[in-house]
Image (cartoon, rainbow, N blue to C red; front, side):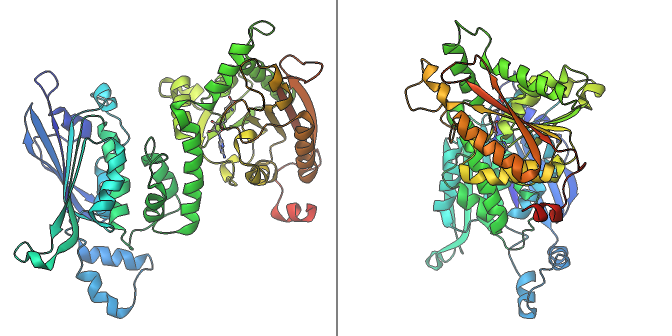
Amino acid sequence: MFLTISTTGTPERPATDLGFLLHKHPERAQAFSTSHGTAHVLYPEATAERCTAALLLEVDPVALVRRGKGKGRGGAPDAALAQYVNDRPYAASSLLAVALAQVFKTALHGQCRALPERAAEPLPLRIEVPALPARGGAELVRALFGPLGWTTVDVEPVALDPEFPEWGDSRYVRLVLEGEGLRLADALNQLYVLLPVLDDAKHYWVAPDEVDKLLRAGEGWLAAHPRRELITTRYLARRRGLAREAAERLELVRLAEADGLDVEDVDNAVDETSDTEERPVPLAEHRRAAILAALRAAGAARVLDLGCGQGQLVQALLKDARFTEIVGVDVSVRALTVAARRLRLDRMGERQAARVKLLQGSLAYTDKRLGGYDAAVLSEVVEHLDPPRLPALEYAVFGAARPRTVVVTTPNVEYNVRWETLPAGHVRHGDHRFEWTRAEFREWAGAVAGRHGYAVEFAPVGADDPEVGAPTQMAVFTRSGEEDGPRTKKQEEDRA
Ligand code: SAH
């Protein structure tokens, strides 16, 4: 079971840099014990012009079957022989992907301390997988790797036996990928996801956190992939619940990444182009000031910023020492990456770093990590959810996380007639699923407060127009005093 990764270079940028990028020295053959056998990394060639690293996985089939059994996948007795006599040890497959992730973990995350700039930029790459089990055949292999930025995706069916061509093709293909537009980490992440997808092996163990792993590895390419559904269902070994969760989260990622623009930038663009005369301060700043004031008034110290986007509010919260714990949550990995960069998380002193955390998660799901905070902010987030998802968000925030204070801001659609650049009847950003009038917002917020034991107050944000109101509307929810912690399921049911 093996694959090779090659690159070319020049005397100034030698191909042997591949050794640094993979964190495996070209002059040493190395062996690693992985969960399914021994992985070897060796370099068949290593010159300044050309360098090839080979990853070879020597699978222990007996251990493999035992492992499978340990996880409750023994199967019927007559299947026992098939378990030993199979192609596992020879074919590139999910096991190779697991080994790849273990052996090249740092490279997979795009990190390289020795040559950080080379890890961050595309390089000439050639990947060869001589025996790739491909359920779906050569055509599916092309459909999967085709849209991912390679110049060449060469897929050749492998004959069952070259001596007897009339026997036809095996279920293996030889895959060669070539291109200059991808980073090493991109290539590794694609292989990590797509090898098991093509293998479609039943024994592949799927843990709940596989959805997170899939989204992380798929960052930047999976959300927009035309075969995304097949990839997620197969990767998650056809586990329906997980596949659905992945599908929903990916759809949100795709929407947030659409046009390469971030939602926040577009909102601000509207603010700034049409805001100059009366209100030189961009609306986003007004909003942050109003939110900070509400949090201070509530005496909150431990704060959740739900749908934190690129982290502007998190940054503002960090500047005030009264906020001792700040957690930014967003569904978009890209937004979180930008946020981490904005906050300089990697260069932050220990004290500061201890105050802030960024989490990936969807507000459409109850999340235990969000329990026990003083306050939660949903700034310009609710309008990004399809209305049928709002009850799920409502439960996750007001029913399960249940902080004492919740601050929600959202556009006031009545104000849209005052934006000169906004055509009549349009929402402020393509990803807004709806925009509410003041009455609609009050109705929703009032009902939510009633259902979950909160009191709610409203405030305009930005210049309050006598006719149409302010551009942003804010609601501050305060949990009624009698209970302290999150409600139990029973309490929730009694209420309902
Ligand atoms: N709060 C920021 C960003 C608002 S843009 C601000 O006020 O500027 C909306 C953000 O919500 C985006 O970053 C988007 O990725 C995120 N988002 C949308 N739906 C989400 C969901 N279901 N779970 C978590 N975040 C979500």
